[in-house]
Amino acid sequence: MIKVIVVDDHPVVRRGLRQIIEDEPDMEVVGEAKNAEECFSLVRKTDCSLVVLDINLPDMSGIDVLNQLKYEKPNLPILILSVNPEDQYALRLIKAGASGYLMKESALTELVKAVRKVSSGGKYVSASIAEKLISHLGAFDKPPHESLSNREFQILCMIARGKSLKSIAGELSVSDKTVSTYRSRIMEKMKMSNNSDLTRYALENHLI
Image 1 (tube, rainbow, N blue to C red):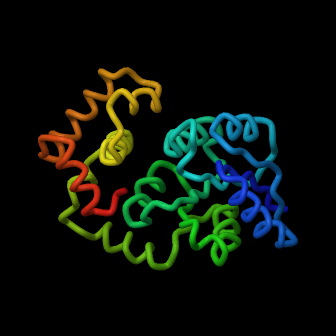
Image 2: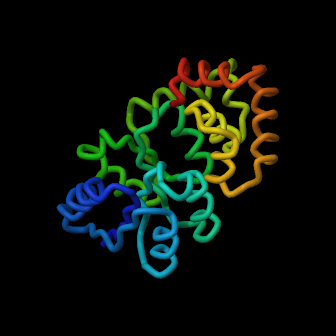
């Protein structure tokens, strides 16, 4: 039996994912969580085969949740569920330890296949993104944001969404000074001078 924990802050989404999974005779949902805190608690006390993780949670970035889960249980497969563009996020998250990346809009048709693949030790991305990732890996000219660390990339996207440095510091549980330092690094690596440039770049490259 493939035992799944579903982590998403929307009850309707969790209910829909549960129905898709439990329609399969060899799968069951052994727990649901609406935020990072509940997710960690469930994973620590529940025997499961994999976690289906929404990348956008209210109390912690999905990237940070992924990092913590991989730290605590390195062999636990994590399937990322997201509304963010695949071609900008999938490779970054798989490099960070995710076993797969699935767009929410594709869950109805691809979730079962993805769960089977990652629970057996494989990696899962959609066919369309697999082609893009292969092309990306073979490309010599990488866009500037590819040079950013995961944390820098996360803060770039938050700045581009109009969040203040103080707000970002609060969400990430770091100091204002730390966020300011990250912003300076981002500006340097991206060769930009202000938040407007970052926002325009993020929009043009479909990062937000």
